[in-house]
Length: 222
Length: 222
Image 1: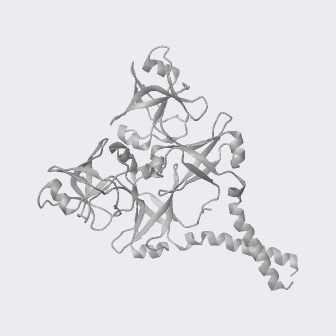
Image 2: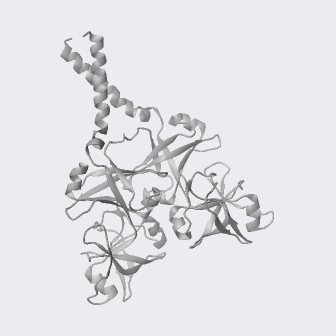
Image 3: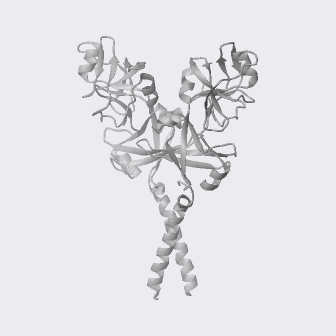
């Protein structure tokens, strides 16, 4: 083989190898993730549930949520801020250690308090808000957040997607208002079922409804 | 040079060339674009302006908008749908050939009519809505849209960014709620000033405010 032909052959082989490697993640792993849109909601500690609804009160299950054991309760509360209120905010059960109110940034403009974008449970130093129930009103000192987008996965899903707990990925959603949600956290637990959670602002920005399929993207943008 | 060394040299040269080419757009062209968040607003034809505000009525300029010649008027209207209303919706001037009402998908849930995502001006077959002014009420048969995201550019900007009118690009926004807005239309005109326009749903999904800088991205995701 003369030198010229050799150069051409090698060049093409290398080019092909590099081009293929960027798409190899998509070929080797699952990419489709169902997306669920979370409306504003409240998690209550058992103490706060009693304060708002009465002694020894227990939540009534309205419907099961996709994450095993979690449910939407029949009961709702009103969230009150310095500029306005949000009525009929659903309580999610079961009770948690600490009360947490999850609203969108749009909701924040309505009540006059902007919630910081935080992962569920990370409420240290977040703003407080007033919660109104049928038996009382409660002013929590912290716990108002806008939930950061995240993906729940069972360990078997994590294997299939080629990711691990704590990974940050991009999720692409196609359509007229195509969006790529960047910095999306993967949370892996045997208690979880495969689902990405976003709020209504994110859903409307992408013009999507619960059940839409997002694509996990691993190739990096420069 | 022996054949083994030659292969190694060529391989490295090709690899370097391919790796650099994907970043070459960003190195050669401008990428930074200021983003403006559009609130719900109305453009009125002169006939509809007269119907709502009275004969020979002229809008009062409240403030100039970033696009030359455009202004926010002191006057507002109420937008009414089957399920609710949006009060104090700003009129933008000057008058246009056809009346057009631009609201977000969040607003659509409030009034009970979902606006299709359309480019400004593309109102054929879009839903109607009721507009209430101080002198009358008007039921437009079409004209309710959710404005598709787009970028205004002067021809000199288009040169600097390496794009032309009608190009579809991605715009990345960094931060806690990093997003890449896909399918963003470039509109080039000597009358335009450099600015990307999004609505409040998109702004909240990315946790950004007017004035935030987006980055034009040309590298393709697989």
